[in-house]
Length: 403
Ligand code: PMP
Ligand code: GLU
Image (tube, rainbow, N blue to C red; front, side):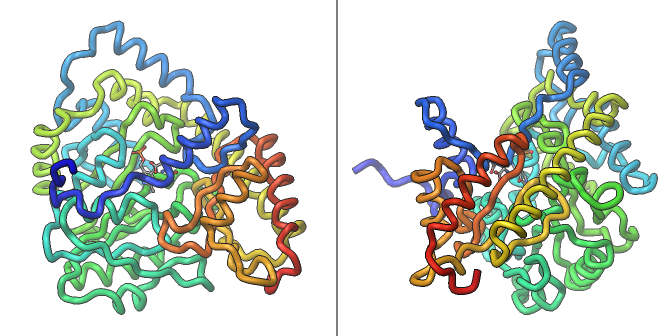
């Protein structure tokens, strides 16, 4: 028997979303005809000006340790970008810390804010890493189930029902992974007011903010009045909007004392994010040509969203799904399939991969195994092929009960 590992890892399991895309890639490499709609990773190449800026940074010798909290020019570029997205609201670059992906920004924030006995509310279904990150801080994640009549979003009464005196935080994701739902500005304002009154920290994961199918970017906590933002932290990053998942650049915008703590924490863990990647990210957040590419990518995601909803309506009219308004995920229910015992999300995905060669993520990864997540960060051709296979597979479930 190996020695036991630290209690820090008591709840640790590896990421199901990462595991599924690894398995799909493995099968593809082995020659299997697998279409991967599991990974939450844009299928576009990183925009040219971003790559060019990265190459130039390397050639210019920007390869030593970076400033721990991030290159000043990048912190300024992110601040300017956030400010422009929120109608010119001032954003102080000194309150930004750049990190190794927004995943690390989330980890740093939770580790700096929460500890034993604290509870952190997580509107669910939720991205797989939130509860894990809260556990790593030795705090307790508390899922707050979203309303099925309302795109699986939560409201103040749902949060209030789960918040006792130990609730110190809330992690909200809009546009949401795994559902694609988007909170409106009044919905955010109601939640911000509730959290402010109860002195609960809001960690707003806005990594998908740019991928929004309504006008402009998705509503943000940064659109709300100052007095509601005392305990609000914004998480942003380059991975999704700029197709930069492998560059590993994310950031947090937080009040000054938290920013300082996060920077100090990071000084002992990573010494800052990859230095040349930070210079590349400056182009992402500020170059007009990249901005145009973001518009093109968002249009492509919107067209795929339309294709998906239209095909579900015509080919599987009874299957319930959340209407996506942002991000690139489509979340649908499988517990109504079949006349007998309906499949769980896990059973559905396992069979779909084995029998039809399509990889999706079971809802279990997000806290509700009645559902399945499809990522449409894939070409329209692959999407069409995957849907043909999936609808044929769906029809193998005899006389559906409520589909
Ligand atoms: N938040 C959400 C909701 C995500 O889906 C992801 C996906 N990886 C992340 C954060 C982390 O992204 P990254 O570390 O690549 O910035
Ligand atoms: N966030 C993406 C997803 O949900 C990428 C994988 C991960 O980091 O979880 O699929």
